[in-house]
Amino acid sequence: MEESAAIKRKLREFALASVNELSSSPSSASPGVLRLTDDTLQIHHDSHQIAFDVHLPLLQIFRLGPVQSVCMVEGSDAGKQTSYSRGVAIQFRNEEESEAFHCVFQQWKKEFNGQGGNIPNGANVMTSKSKFDEKIEPSSAKMYFHYYGQLLHQQNMLQDYVRTGSYYAAVMENRTDFFGRVVVDVGAGSGILSLFAAQAGAKHVYAIEASEMAEYARKLIAGNPLLGQRITVIKGRVEDVELPEKADILISEPMGTLLVNERMLESYVIARDRFLTPNGKMFPTSGRIHMAPFSDEYLFVEIASKGLFWQQQNYFGVDLTPLHKTAFQGYFSQPVVDAFDPRLLISPPMCHPMDFTKIKEEELYEIDIPLRFIASVGARVHGLACWFDVLFNGSTVQRWLTTAPGSPVTHWYQLRCVLSQPIYVMAGQEITGRLHLVAHSAQSYTIYLTLSAKMWGPGAEQGGILQTSSCKLDLKEPYYRMSQQQSYPTTQDQPQAQPFLPTQIKSQDFDDTEIMQEPSPNSCVQIDSFMQNT
Image (cartoon, rainbow, N blue to C red; front, top):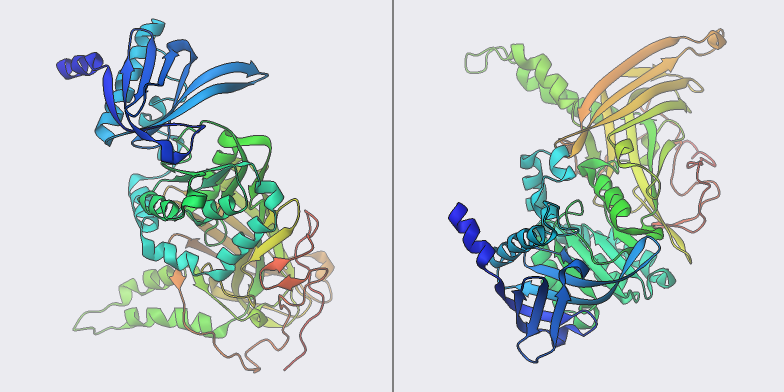
């Protein structure tokens, strides 16, 4: 090992697959060679003799991916920000040669400085354990990046025209925010949002993608050369990679089920703190989790009946009943993901807002939401229904993307937490409780839900709880219930009032996924009227 390290230190010349001045077009790139002397770094194009010859103290190297790096020459300090007078993008022939160079460069710089310091913005960032690794277990991360590295899943998201169309409209309607600006696409996937930003006139887009989808993104972007010449795909995680300049705009699709599933919002916030200029914009800018109690006898019976299998006392001569209780609890520990009829809601919803421009990463580790509703009908409450929306707060147009029940269905659908023990309420009765989300290392959350029915009628002012029901669910393991919506006739077993329709929202005007008028920051969706009995 020591002999191998000594050989690496002696290697001071590296062949490059391509060399390109940052000020030149990508078509001017050509193969070259990189040399390290005692105190300078030299890069020569094979096609001509113009050399990049930099004295070590003025050199910064940014590693953009496994084989891509940028060499920058520091200019003058303007306040707290360092300006750069020249830059060259280099690409090694393979990952092994890239890694060898960065190891040699690190040792070279240490020897030059006469101390064991790290390389600013250099290779050490790629090899040290990142914050992502400290929070997320490796098996979960491996499955996550494998999943998003498949074209079939990217197609599923691209074919969500509510999602993709809302992003396209938000970008193109706010061209003034993107024109001539530096954009960072966080978790770029196929690169579609980067291409939208380039269409809007972005000066340059850095598309950061950690999965193997980065290679497909490069192909897609290369196939659109008029836009692709202003897009650089960087394979890596936002917690690890370095960029040669700050961003004016962050764009991302960090939303998961219940907004926070997959914990990508944390990466979005990290990217904000690492890459965004102080007055930069974020698309999306903020989000809201909406919640309301619901009554759905069909769903409750469907889940409860799954446990009947374990009530068999003679299953091939075996008594299964000892596992019935555990199985029953297991079925009710799964949040239900589907598109439900909004008439199942039995009270106006409330919401929990999140400002992505201000929220701290640590605030996403644990989310505690106190609940309070007033029942509009007498019904059996089977749990809490949840959905979300996000705001693109552009300078020209403020556009919303909603996943509300009754709106055009998205690939997020809606989510319902079902109680194994429903509670009963009367019209006008107060429902209180708590929705508590605790992040875990499998890139999701444990959900703790409690709903209580308070005293109602004469003597209610004295307070007191009549009924309480609680459940614990794993957002990582939902029950995807994608069958067609049930028809809910008016019967004595179903609530007769229909208290919520997204088309009946006070001071709001939905047009598919758009709300043209922004609600006040602290306000939530308010119900204007209720649907009459059918």
